[in-house]
Image (cartoon, rainbow, N blue to C red; front, side, top):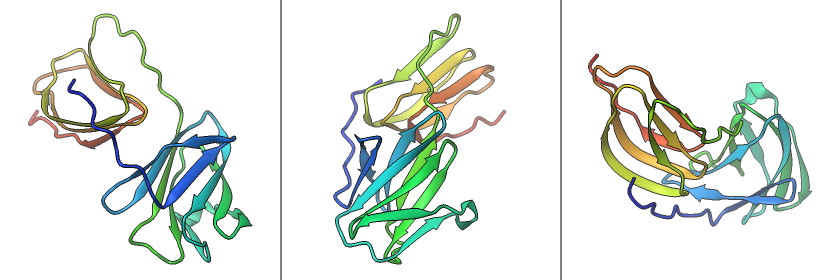
Length: 171
């Protein structure tokens, strides 16, 4: 794989979990953080602006929060939560919070492994995949690629990173 380009960090939000600060990245229309957890965790979100209103979507999850000061809230996040935190009624620039279980890089005997492990942005273009291929996208990786597996079988795409696009083969 090509060399990773560092991802832009959020100037608006800081997020921590169990006293450990998490990387919060800045996207075009949102900021986001990826939390790796086996169960549930209390997450603290600090905003550069004073927090007057908090909307946590989807609302059907019934997520509650507590305030510790005018800039900080805390909430419990469970594995499988994919939340949008909209502060002060601003739906145009939410903080997206993704909570997943850690998927380690393993040994895949008999497979061709393509691994993106260094955190950052990879503009990889088109990647043609053969049968028995594993594409591993590590924590903090954003992979911008078209993945093709024409007539290929047993392809695995896994990890805790983000894939911006995956194009499917015609078959």
